[in-house]
Image (cartoon, rainbow, N blue to C red; front, side, top):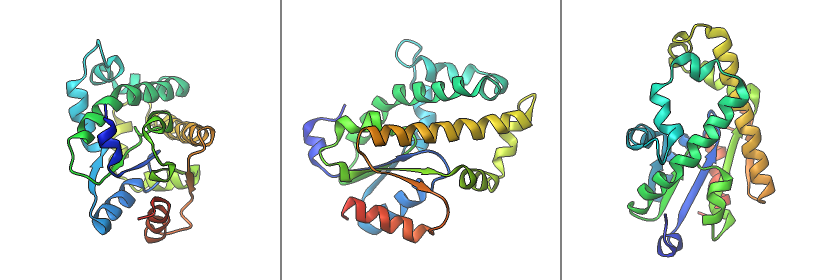
Amino acid sequence: MLSSTHLNAPIYWIGGSPCSGKSSIAQRLARDYGLTLYLCDEAMGRHIEQASFEHQPTMARLPQMTPDAIWLEPVAAQVQRVFNFYREEFPLILADIAALPRPRIVEGAALMPELVAPLLDDPARAIWLVPSLAFQIEYYTQRPWRHEIVRATSDPEQAWANWMARDAAFADQIEAQAAALKLTCIRVNGQHDLDAMAGQVARHFRL
C-alpha cells in the first residue's frame, strides 16, 4: 500500500469506464505537464500472471474461463466479477505506483471511487469519466478487435449485447459511487473533443 510519504507527492487519478477517453486524456496530460504515466490496462496481464487463487481468486480464475463463461453469463454476474477483479487487483496497482517517479498520473477502470477515496488528501486530484450508452456503443464499434472477442463465443450477438450492458451498468455504478463519496464524475457524450476534455480535467486537477 502507499505510505503517507507517497501520498504527499502529487498523484492524479483518472478512473471511469471504457470508451470515455480517459486513457487519451491521461496520456495528453502526462505529456503536457511532465507527469509519470501509469495505465492500469498495460499492467493487467502481468497482474493476472501474478495472481493466486488464495489472494486473487477472481483474477486467477479468469484465464481458465471459456469465452462463453465470460460473455454469456447473466450481466449482473459479469458486473460483479468486474468489481471483484478490480478490488483484487488494486493492491497490485498501488505497489506498482509506489515505485514510480513522482509526480504521477494514474488511469484505469480499476480505479473505482470506493478504492481511491481513502487515499485522497484532496478530492481535486481524482476524477471519473463514464460515457453515455450511445457514445459507448459508438466508440466500441470503431474498434475492429471487438469482433474477434465475441466471435469466440457460441452466440456473438448475445455476447455483444451483454458486453454493452455490462459496461453500461459498470458506468452507472461508478457514477453512483462517486456521487455518494462527493467526488467528481463526468458523463462523456461526445459533444466535446479531446482537447476540450483534457482541458477540463487539467483545470479540475489545478495543473
